[in-house]
Image (cartoon, rainbow, N blue to C red; front, side, top):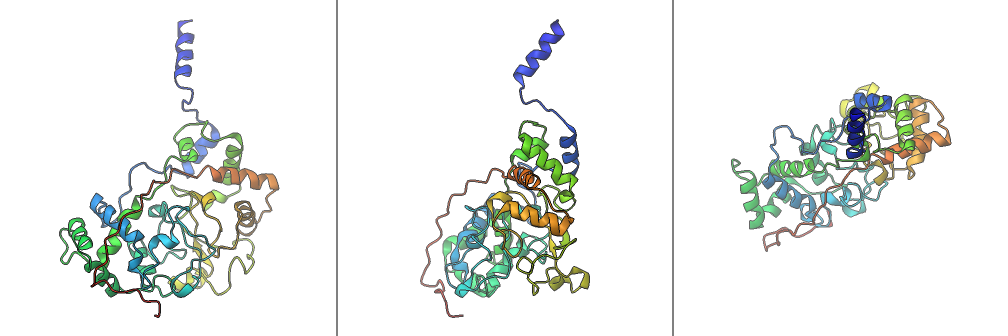
Length: 345
């Protein structure tokens, strides 16, 4: 009788006690929860000083030639770390070739960009600044801009005390990388479920998770970021419509020049996927349910039922985590030495 009372008391005190089931155990072998701490990055210790500087650089449009485009323009932290799509609009209203990937949780990806051409966030940060269809600037423009403002010079000295000179293009990239490493979104319902809370997902989401694993979605979309860890052809079982997979964009082939990499792309990470339509590298699908259906057909060779699509979408909604609260920084005031904006080149 006393044992029964103790057991009853434990249940009353811990209504959400860990309750492992077969689906939870299987998920634990395939996926990992987002850690609460900021992850380390290679060859670039993340410090408060770097993060503060990197945040300002992330939001400063004066790094661009036009003075109107910042990192946040295409990776808007208020809209899931992406812009409105389907592809970003850059300098002189030029349209980019691909959908902007999300910056949230990008630190967990094996490489950056859809084709994986940047091995880390530091290298990724250098690309858009110099791309003519994006920020259209040069390292010299960036250095001139930052060195013209004493506040920035002082912040670089503090963030990079062993660097002479402190303001370098490499250090700009390192500071932005440090800030972006903090842009993780832990504590999604799915993370809570992986940590043992069986009530964190509702019944439909559990069914969707089971389908996601059994149908084979998790063979590509796995790990901490539910993707972002490997490269696969877009169209394993069936060639997608050219609207979804433009013929001219051969994906990773442009990086490796290996014939087998034609139309191969880095697997899209699915964290917060419900926040960032449109989908695919072409940005041509605006419904998450439609995207699930497309993936079933072209990647798995299976026509999913309406219910299966709805159940998987329900699971994908459980991947929305707690986005960090971002206070827009007050940027240093330009001086007479700050380069003026240029729209003509």
